[in-house]
Image 1 (cartoon, rainbow, N blue to C red):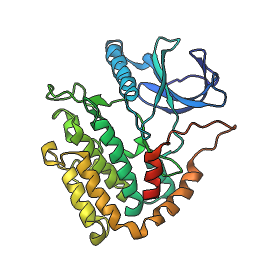
Image 2: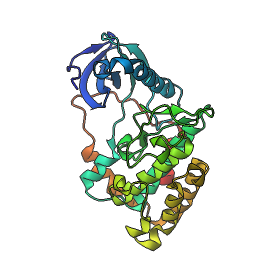
Image 3: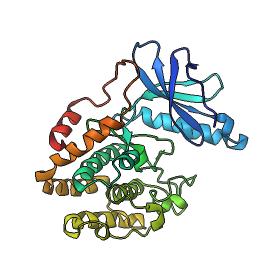
Image 4: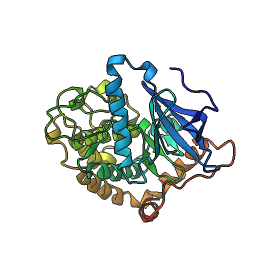
Length: 319
């Protein structure tokens, strides 16, 4: 897929600096804001050139749904929409806060090992808090694509959920999703046309993500039949977590925990039991993060995405 060239200007305000990522139907760029000196954002553009004519309306609707969902969220663990516009190619685009961090899948590749319980549980607790915010929207927002590559970890230990491209609002009138979307190995069985995705679909994906972080196993190879976590790790150390993941990984949504709040409370109890060793996690992860996070080529004014009493309290508690 051919993207834009460095230096391209968008909406007479944003100048393209680099490509941050690309998907099947678009690109995400780092852009400089020419109205706010030194400020950089992320810009996502739908590439209509790769979309079949008969699918364009659906692709545009899905893209605009992402913008709408993000615009109505207010959580430091979610990108914030700054500006929405139509490009010179007639494609929808939007500008959002740029996250300074590294995806969890890349982090594991670089440190070349799974994460420990002390490293994993604080991450999972933060993801629970983000999912709670999504699920408490009216109607609830179902993320549908929870996986390590969509979780960014900053050098302060904060987690940010990225890529809301297939997120949707729950519709109690529907029996199943209009489209079968998700990442094999991480997404729930109902995302294969077996039913409508609900909050419990994100709970399933949180479990597959946790399983991967703790084992680096090929989760797709399990085909929805995950061995107990105790097959990989010390049985005594992970017994309770293994039981929780087993409940979250049930094939039938109604057999999983009823809410992400239920999962968070159980994880927090496990975290309190790990308290005497928790500082070790920060010491191990932060050097790796600093090495991985790309330094800016020129001085920039980075906006504080993680601010406010919640995150200050969070880091005092967990890090």
